Length: 285
Image (cartoon, rainbow, N blue to C red):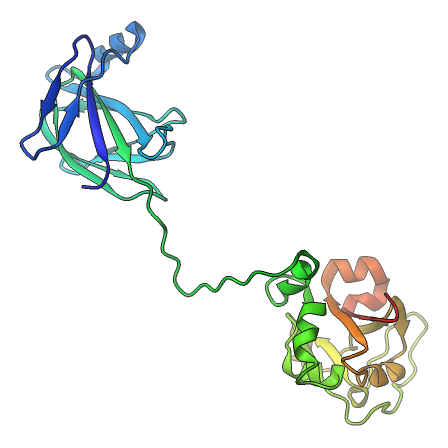
């Protein structure tokens, strides 16, 4: 058994010891007359088991603990004051089990006679978390370290500091570092052929020879959709020039951010509907 318990007789003070050596301490009257009168709600020949769940380390009531009598198949949940109540319990010894996240499981055989209030003290226990690695970063890099874990993709200054030792250009970085919900198509050669003209205000299907960041769900279709727009230091770049931007040295880039969905569309209108790759250089900060 993990944890301890105490039993409070309503009108007397005494000490009891169970056959298993479990100390049951009577601490005095705990219930008000109104609460005492509630005992009449039980069925004839049955009694009420009630008490409180307490944190054994600081004596603070524990809310949301599940108190059960496995032999009877009944349970109750402690309220914000740690109080629980189970009606219609036969008098006698019963196995009592308490479960609460963050505490060790409590189990004990307890004599129940309807004249005592059962206080159960839980022992705090660690929650095992397997396969989780915790990394501490500075506040400046916190936003940029969430790449791949949200609807937005970031390659921030902290990560670029590591990537520039292995990759020389943005093109090399995007080949190795995947952006969430996006697919990078490397340029065949810097500054490929310009895309064919289209009607005014309609995005052109950019030529993949220039390099292209394309939303994943669009890149799987049979037709070639437009590429995500490229924004360098807050200035939208035309598709041909974007091919050259991918050759920018990693030493010149401060951060890269990929937007898609409603945020990109609200910020850049129709052109942002296919995503937007935001590149910020050290010079443009």
